[in-house]
Length: 220
Image (cartoon, rainbow, N blue to C red; front, side, top):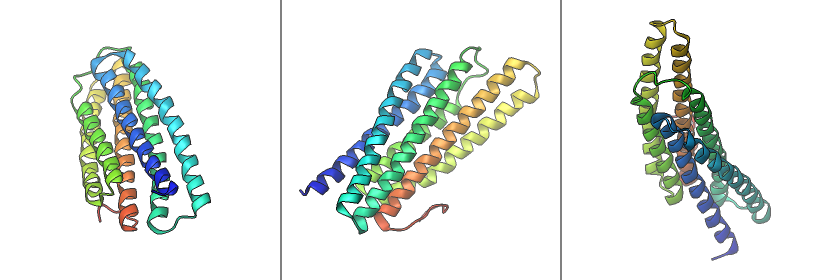
């Protein structure tokens, strides 16, 4: 294989590994809240450092590949998509950290209610991240398109969570109840953003494979 091809393969592997780190961060951050185990926050923060370092390496690699090889066509679409995916993955890591930090505050209080829909939402989001990066790894536009359809499920779960929490807030004047409800709303919002980032990756895969920009559209 050409040196250029080897570097492209290495770039793909780094992004796949980074996506795995992000999935772990999301799982640990939500598990920390559900299991009320604050020690899991260390796992999130340790992985954040690794994700941030990978982002820098990937960005640098992409810029060098463009500058030194002047790629066109499919190769150029791959590199530009990789740069966007890299950015989305880094932002996913940030959202997982946000969930973790909110969770640390939330665990200072007793449970407001059994957490059912938030873990469901996290599971759906992790599946979206897994499928979107697998679609990237396999150049599979059809798999990427299935990720787009899953975003509606995540949005619906967020709507249910917000509606449920608003009911708690309107039926109490207790300050700690309000604080916990608001924190859970922020967590649901972060999970929704994670789904949006996974959707962005899926859209980038479709662009990479077909050369078609479907951003702001529901499907191809």
